Image (cartoon, rainbow, N blue to C red; front, side):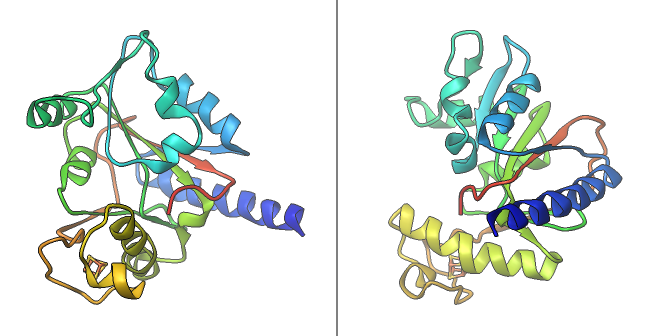
Length: 209
Ligand code: SF4
């Protein structure tokens, strides 16, 4: 059964990759977390400055630990005294690590954000954006992807950060305008004008939320 599920995910991943490439984004398949980490490190030249938005998937494959190595220049916003300076530095990073809240079978990437530093850096700034995406994030179309972002990813993230939002209480989106909302900005990445800027590693595993 597990083998069948993995095979189905692999076939679906190739469909997503075809969609991403048609949108001028680079995409790769990784059969597991180890393969994903290896591929990610191949895509990050030594000496790169690296920033990240909240990216649980990158943590789960070991990438966040790996880029703390002195051969990279990791911009750690959590540890920075001047968080605004670190955020501005992130916009000029060589590589920005991110996950996706959802991705469609034809390669459209959906992200929602409260502070909006993540979606703004995905849209513009860092020279390369590297998405680590588990197959649990794949949805049939943009509608389904938005529903996933707001009814699966958002409630879990709201709970994780102790935010006072209706979804943290009910487990699904109530379309709130609460001060803590994490749905300030929705980013739909449907094409990249810049060759090689957006890179996606699709991992045949469940990652993140
Ligand atoms: S709009 Fe509000 S209730 Fe809906 S997912 Fe976003 S934070 Fe949660």
